[in-house]
Length: 554
Image (tube, rainbow, N blue to C red; front, side, top):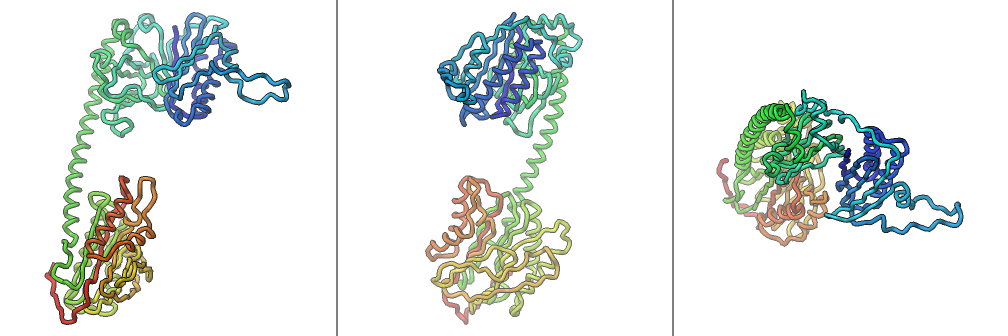
């Protein structure tokens, strides 16, 4: 008996094309006559075409299995698929029209299968359709020689061909059209797979990951679990285009291992694989140790970055203003930051910024920006153009020694705590949201300036507004408005503004927590790609001209 198999999960036309190539290949290998090969090829094409067209959405991509067996002058073709149950042999043939001109294209495939095969059988078993067609061949099949690649199999090196032919008996050769699992961890294994072409990947952790051992042409897999009869200890997947010689466990144990030289070759190949796997394991361990060290360093960097942010409550000894900040990094460290700095007894500088980029490079640039901001002179009342000059100076400093061309967007505010006059500079940042007194939140759209750190020598235009008693100001990074849900939709500025307008007046901590919660609830379980940072400011009462609070030096 001669057996050939095709394993595929390819949907649509790709399935038909793969099956057509496979039928031509086994027809040539088995030496089928032209008429016999034509009948088999037509049936293979008709079966796979119907499967691709009518299998249904639940069938696309699910494994299909084609096999052909030849014994004496009889060929048995079987299609096994995991689609919805369907018995094509039970379909009544459509009546022929009275005139040839009325004959429609298509719809005669089942009748074609019946006419080209001598016997048919269908059953639905184990969750699969199983359709078998039997063909009586017009001429005997010439026994094929050894399949391509068999001579290069390490286990059969220097083994007499006659002894090998007798031991293998009926050959089962599998062609894999696309990546398919052969074994999953915990499965009982009943076959040894010799790789004639392509490769098999062994995943110790999870299928499809980057950590795997590759079994290439000339090697085999499955012999250990066949010998010790233990479940498979790894996931074994064949890659697209792989060709396998499959030997069942009884044949392998009783006949193949008994051939002189095979056992010795297998032991030698196993030793070589063990040495190779040892090297892979050592390298994997090195990488794991390096990753663990990097993870520890990133956790330490996270703690250091958190310590750079101002401690809550932000203004514990100055009751003229409330401030609350929140930051939720997308990674261990990020490029977002906020700060609140007293320039003198009556002037407060606050900022929310977002460094372009992610991870450690953005965090280091963030540290540089914070250091430059906190190095500003203190104690002298700021001039009218102080804020613009401060941002321009910061821009020039960050442009220096900046080979990576990093930059940041930011919203800067300078508030006179006596008059509640706010001067602000928006440097390419999302607009702040302001609710003056009892009025609803609105966006502070203008003026907009370039980001900081891109081009030296830039000037920055300020805006100005007076905060009424009870006013609330919200500064945030684009991680808030660009928070994504599981379908890829974004929170957006309109939703954020509507949410803020729905909130009742309250402490700045309530506003900060509400906005952060809104972004995280909108995202649901989706992993975020950007840091989420907010800073809420609230004027709780009328200013007291005689009140003077000198903050402690940072």
